[in-house]
Image 1: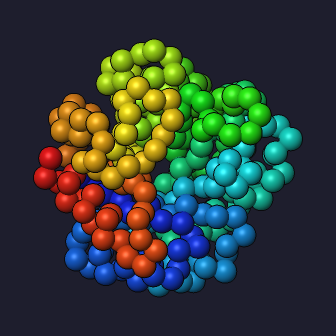
Image 2: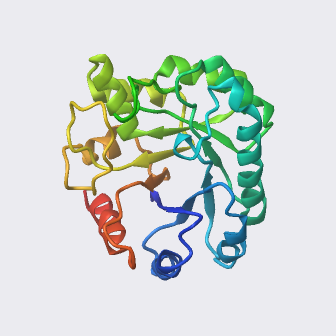
Length: 255
C-alpha cells in the first residue's frame, strides 16, 4: 500500500500539530514531511512528542538557502546544521534538498557533498522560478541531466516531484508524462504530489487532488510502486484544521 505523507512546517505547532496527531491516529496518513524553517529549534520539543515517522525538508530559497551560490556557503551550512539537529532528534529517514537558484549545478553538488549527509535526497525543480522581482531566474536540478550530476557527485538519493517535472517539461516544450519517465530511471526514494491547474504552465500551483488536470490514475499505474512514499503537497485552505488534506488522501486512494 502507498505510504502518504502530510507536509507541514516546523512553525506549525498550534492547530496543525494537534490535527496531525489526530489524523495519524485515524490512519489517514503514514508520516510527516516537516519543512524546517531556519532558527526554529525552539519548536523541536513539540514535534518530538509526536509518535509519528518523519521525513525532513531543508529550507530552500524562500528562506535564503541556495546551494547553487558560492557566496551562500556559510549561511547554507548554518541552515543545514539546524535541519540535521531536527533529523537526529526526530530520527528522520531522509532530508530533502532543493538544488538552488541560478549559479551552477557543480556548486550545488559541491556544497551538498560537503554536508556529508547520508540521509540527503535531491528534489527536481521547475525550470524557472515563479515570476517576481527582476528578470527570469533558473532552478538547478530542473532537468534529468542536472539531477544525474548531483546524484553522481554527492552519492545522494532522489525525490521526484511530479508537478515540478511537468513545469520543467512545459518550459522546454516536452510532453510532460514522457518527461516524468526520464526521472524514474533514478529510482526515487519518495515522491511529491499535488494536482496541476494548467498542464501547459511553467509555474507550480499546488491545487488539491482531483481539482486539476493531472492524470493521477496514470501516475499510480505507470510510475508509483505500491509501497511508494508520497508526500501530498497541496495548499491548505484552513488555519485550524486539515480536513482538506484528509480529502486529498481519499481522492488519491480512490482513483
